[in-house]
Length: 398
Image 1 (tube, rainbow, N blue to C red):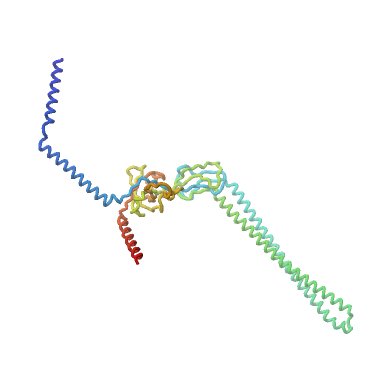
Image 2: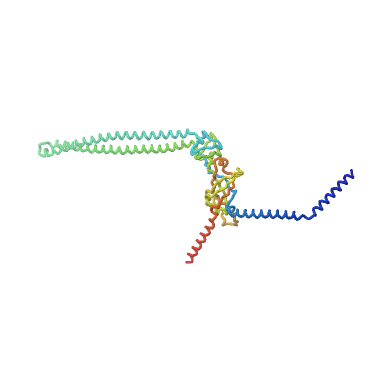
């Protein structure tokens, strides 16, 4: 057994010596040529790849502006009641799709129906008052006609009495008639004239009464119009007890429950217009030189790996995000460290309804804007600025 182990150890030692000797043998010229050719091919491929990469970067890559500081947004509408009251019915559930004008919830209408009925009764009272005064006007018109007739009768009596006085005056002077008779006729004439004055005063009073009654009619009508305005407001409040969707979308953040008391303006739910999504991308200020509305955009949603969505630049914000913050930075005080600012860019999503259904506000996305359409803009701006500077210097020299 010991002899067999010694034999094996000897064979292993001979094998190791043979391998060591082979490794020390110099490589053949053919093998060196193969290695040299492989290295040259690899270097050529690397150079060609670098050339293609550089050419692609100069023609395309440098104009592709990318950011992952971008999120899906939607202009959600907060649903709040216009009137206060207890919730009677809730017609929608959480995450339910709704159409514009669809009822969302119902507030108890009994109080508002009672207010409407009360104001309608006030309108009826005002109308009845106006009709009653108009009836009095008709009665007063009849009184005016009677007063006019009385005046005409009094004027006739006064004219007759005056004629009798005129006829008896020369007779009494000649003694043909007694002076006592003339005095009686003169007294009758004075009484007739007094009756004429009284009838005239009564007619004037009756006519002035018409003006008073007309004013009362106008007052009753004004009260009716005021009540009608109150009725319109009450009907608006009654109609506002049914809260409807102002836009189409999907219900979210619903907190309302049946039996809950709502104050006017209390937030009950939100409606997200999922068919009107857009992306708010915050690009560095160094990326905006060639960015223009209408440029194509490639959109990659983190929730949809491998799916490329098309879009286009819709607008660029008129200021950086810092300028619209609650407390804008004041760099004029203290130490200053320059930080690259970011500007919000609104991007429209050009996707079909099925793809939009998978996108919700708040999702993270990565967008790439193709700015090649404006690649000559900076050069043009620089030329214009040079011309402006030259013209200004020339004007200052003169």
